[in-house]
Image (cartoon, rainbow, N blue to C red; front, side, top):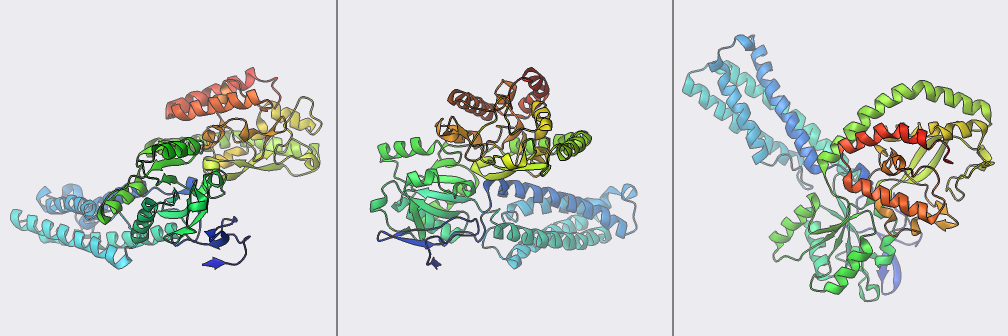
Amino acid sequence: MTIASPLAADTAGFPIGGRSGGEPVFQRGPLRPVALASTRTRISAAALARAFGSLDTVIIAAAVVVAAGLTRTNLLRLPFGEVLPALIGSGAALGLLSAARVYAFTQRERLTAHLAKVAGVLLCASMIAALIGLVIGARALVTSTWSGTLAVALLSAHTGWWLRVQAWRAAGRMTPNIVVVGATENARKLIQSALLTREVAVLGVFDDRLSRSPGDVSGVPVLGDTTALLAHPLLPYVDRIVITVAPSAQARVRDLIDRLRLLPNAVTLFMDVDGAEARTHALSRLANTSLAQVSGPDQNERRAFAKRVQDVSFGTLALLVAAPVMALVALAVRLDSPGPIFFRQRRHGFNNEAITVWKFRSMRAEAADATAARQVSANDDRVTRIGRVIRKLSLDELPQLFNVLTGEMSLVGPRPHAIGMKTEGQDSARLVAEYAWRHRMKPGLTGWAQINGSIGAVDTPEAVRRRVALDVEYIESQSFWFDLYILAATIPALIRARNVVR
């Protein structure tokens, strides 16, 4: 689709485009999803497959119990020989479901094809159960009832899951988004394989030799050079940056890796392979795991799941405990000065995503500074009387528990900084080359930097560098137990820092 105006924007609210013959051409590539979802909201296909497999296990086990009930038989009093065929059939069904790859939910699989695979598994499992029943001389009543019950339950469940997966895909939450660096033959091969399989969405191409690059690669627009990529608004929606420059060009590849390693996104070196089948296999691996990953966050689904469970459980408990205090603070803010109770500020979240962080308002409403162009100082005339108290006790941060529960933040992580925050008149993000590394994990209510004394304003370049160093140290060492230690150490750290300006 070609858009006439160079100011045209997609649903994410930023321009899309490339070049053709030196003139700007704004177009949506053939792999660009209708809606863009941030990497934070992306759903892992592997985790989803495990979840659906677990639900199938529950359904299959429940079918045995329901079948016994429908035959008016107490399962505990049923002779083992009567239920053995259904039990063996259940085990066969679980194995066959996995072998038939029914949990793949591939991009082009139609509902009828998916249900046909499930029906085939059910037929095989039922035949196995019937054969076992004949061999041991068991009555067919329980086995046949189990087969019918399981068929209705599994076909209904998989219809619902297929529809749910399609909705997630339409919302851009299922297919990994990548951008390609290098308008090369490797890029063309990768994009053509992606067009066939639809396992990844290639949002755009960037090339450090822009003057010699085409306007598009197999229909995917060239959006700029690598300098443009470093600050491109697409980045919060990009799961992986793929370098397709031939590895034999060692100097060029090394230079690209050095430049791109400053980003929070995972960076992968895509190796050329011969044959369409081999490329399809490589693309499938690219969609699910790393291929020669050279920088970026370590993808550990179990650790991320444990951290999310920790956030929801401890965050809910903390919100219940803090609710009376929050009600009193809200009343005090309302009575102390005119203006809203809450202050909302746009800050950087995971993978540079812009999120809205909630706080209790601690400044005069007319003096609010959403971009932190002027950081808080001692005896700051913008801070209200109640504001000084709640800032000193860090009570103004309590509404961020809602950010934790919605998944935008975590209990423990690098503290989110305001977008455009300045230190001594300079953009804080430009003071440290590795600044964006702190966005390789969700921002937190507290963190390793805070319990090590980096609390409040970072009003000098040295303070920015120290906080970034501590944040990166935490990201490299994060674990469930490390987070628990930081949570336990937070209140003592706040007490020690009670005189720090914040």
